[in-house]
Length: 102
Image 1 (cartoon, rainbow, N blue to C red):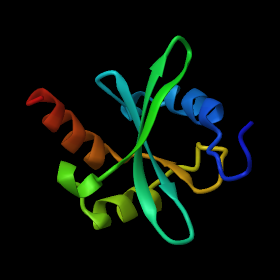
Image 2 (cartoon, one colour):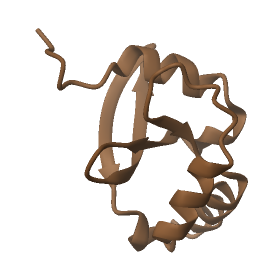
Image 3 (cartoon, rainbow, N blue to C red):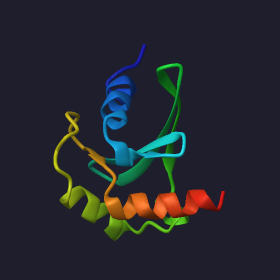
Image 4 (cartoon, rainbow, N blue to C red):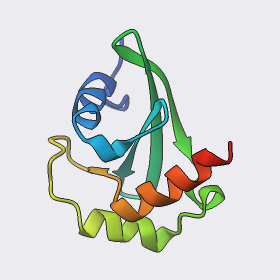
C-alpha cells in the first residue's frame, strides 16, 4: 500500500495524457519540484496504468537546470498536484530531437 511518499501515479498519468506536448514517443514527461530538488520524470504507460516511472538525468538529454526553471516559471498551472509541472515547448523540442536519433 503506497504511503504519502509515493507519487500519485494514476493522477499524474491522467493529467499528462491530456497535455499533448508531454508525450514523446511512447513516454510522457513532466517536472516534479520538491523542497530539495527539481527533477524531470518519465512515465511509460501500459494497459491504462503506469507501467514504468523513472527520474531522468535531464543534463544527459541536453536540458539545463535553467531550462527546468523556465518551464516551471512559464507553467500555466494545469496540474492539480502541487509541485508538478508540464514540460515547456523548449524541453519538448530537445526531447523530440533526441528521440529521432534513438
